[in-house]
Image (cartoon, rainbow, N blue to C red):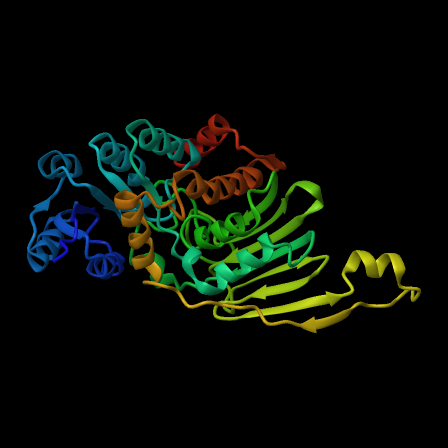
Length: 366
């Protein structure tokens, strides 16, 4: 009879609404043994702890010292991610942190340094990387199936009502979130941009508060530039409804990644050949609808897939799908867009850490 090796798992922020997804992920990870939970909300935290049959703590540092967990999940509001993560990593625990990894990229730098200095895993919960259609798109891009990438367009309507902000006073504030749509709804889309296409080298952005009575942006428009001529535009808003989508255009074809589907068309011949050789000044290449092979996940999906990956990494040395360095990229883009808009300038990446932290401090009224 084979005995499953267990890792002691603790959760900080058990009172969060998203805890239900982490609870399900733990239940789908047989190697996970939940040993304790923590939250600043004593009443809700004690209730959750009683339901789970584990000890409750109000202070993360005390829980880390008492329980010495092997893995710690951090699902607090993101202004608290960095310090709790550093404390957990310094205590010898691997860390799974919710998105965004932190509020500003300097905090993410500290988290990464703590993980690498303690030889611990730092995983960021970007579960969309595990979607079968996203994996298929990445495979296509890496195989050169779209040729040279010319353009990327991302449109993400995330409509939210006034009640969404009234029900949680920290939302839409500089102190509570460090941004608006870019820090709350946008990180997954920004992460997919980086995961599929790599980190841009230059950003110009315009952030606006068009409708909601909040401090931070509810709408952003940005232009990205990669090396070798690839450009992109990004639009995100909590005052618009509709389908979220990413379009990628290359010399070999176009691809539209929707919320649940993919449309892929190949150019025959490819654009470079067509432009050079077609005698018709207004001729268009033939666009052929092509099938993209999408394989079902061999294992859990969503948050459970992230947990599976972390446990495989901790126990068997598997590579993390999204480690701290990769998880930092979307935050750096969000910070850069805010910095670009508030300074009215194009921003080169890597981002000026000191400059951004000074801007954020002013916005937070410090």
